[in-house]
Image (cartoon, rainbow, N blue to C red; front, side, top):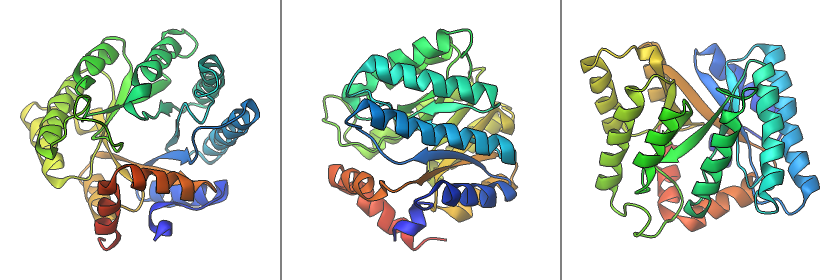
Length: 279
């Protein structure tokens, strides 16, 4: 089952998956699985995988970028370490003509993650080469997006996959969906190029209607989805002229990473199970 949703354990596996998708006219963001390193050495080793990826992406001229988690870059050890390690990756991505997205983790890390992203983007040598993920189920997300857009920072909008308390996040799916659309409209009408990450046909349909009604160019944004999920929908959107990017996870740490996600939020397990039997 894991092979459906994880590209493999090695860099070569991730690149093979990326090349297949790119040949179909679909972009890729590569994620080397892992988080919460316990030493500075581990943080630098994790970053080195991404440095290799950036070189290989450039050499193969792939429509691909990278996504990193700050806890994998040492955030739990020392925020300054994580910011320094990530800054080097952003600099490398910029020089390679690529882009780095900082993934969002649980809500207790939201503010420090956004602070680091904003500081990195404020640097003249890094501006425009770093983006962040915002989770629609958090109450704070609208104000966060308004600030990020004002500073010219690119956003990937997702619903959110961590188990958050009701005083932090919308507990009902209908409220999350409504907020997702509200935030999508803000992003679509902003000047930056953003990513809307969802597999929900109803939300995708609503986004397509909004884009058509407001005469927004289909290439002004991209739909994003997870590797192995709704492959039929991925190809259909690409065939219609929308930009599509697939989040491709890989690495030897896939098992503990996914087990934590499934244990934290049982709905994640149901989501994967349902999609295992889809095209």
